[in-house]
Length: 259
Figure 1 (cartoon, helix red, strand yellow):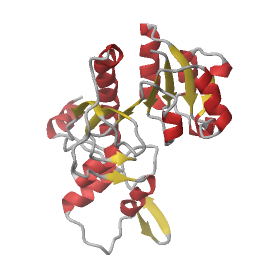
Figure 2: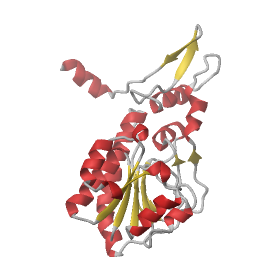
Figure 3: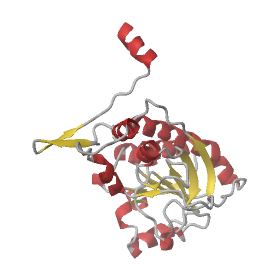
């Protein structure tokens, strides 16, 4: 199948590199504008496509951009940590649909920061390969994998585990998608959860006059520990004081001390 890749971040780069290594026909690339790119140089280098086959993801709603993509005659789209919502008129360009790789165990934690909310809310953590539809992370599921949250996980360490699981789930299931052996199944009927980018603002400020359980406070602090991002904070003398939590099992602590 002729593939249009919509790519950002390390996972997007790794999947693109893997597809190119398989010699799958990647006929076009959609990438974030420079200010929002992660691993942009690596992605462009792996794609090795002429400029007329590379598109700015922030411009996909422009008719002339959609027309240029239509002329490439893509069969399937792959959304790989791509941060723009794809509208139905864009999705209709792909006879075989658009697959999305999402770092949550759908229907839990649709939307943004699933690594944070799995820790804070105690919802299942995992990854999902699914089709895109008019909703946000609501399309039929191809494959899923649970990723356990350990007591020592931070937002960063869980995110790294989710990245690795995303890559593995994609590589294991892509051949079945291409061969037509794998088809999507509707998501469970329960509502699941959904979070917007700004929802973390509701937990980031630790109010020193409020009462938290120890578990809740630790979960917020570790979920928002992801250097170099700022994360959780409290206010003291008119200034914000940011907090990062280091989590170690006892045997790891002793091993580090002995070393």
